[in-house]
Length: 204
Image 1 (tube, rainbow, N blue to C red):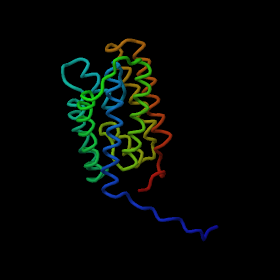
Image 2: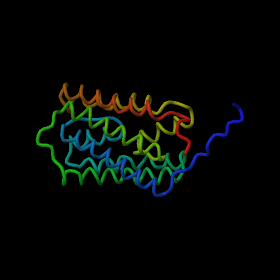
Image 3: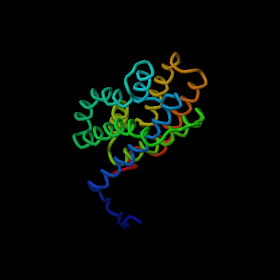
């Protein structure tokens, strides 16, 4: 058994990384649009952008892009330029796509609870696609991935704790039923990340 040769791992090509960024950000941004139209929230830097957008006239896309800017320094210092470049592109694409999706699709009837839970599921799958290709959506994602790589702290567990705090901070912005739906959605999103993104699972 000791003589069994493990197959060599093949790194992703530049085209594969580019397509993953495109597909992953399309999924995440579509989930964001569902949450936005339902009047729901989520966690992390996206949750902060939601909160501010509900209280001001600024769009989610603009806020999401700006809020992520301070985190790139940590990304460069701890994760390297390749990760930072991919993450910057992913954040920019999500900011762009959240403005483009409404031009092509609009939900005339959307159950808020369904939209919140399913939107977070779509976002969770999109996150996994990005993580698999060594990218993130900035902010708490960068911090969570760095702590996971450095100290073995599960990214999903850390994000779950932070996201719960962000969603609870929205108590005076949304109704209690929508707050409950938002919490359920955030838990669903982070459960997907916790199950599918662990130290040592992805090597390339």
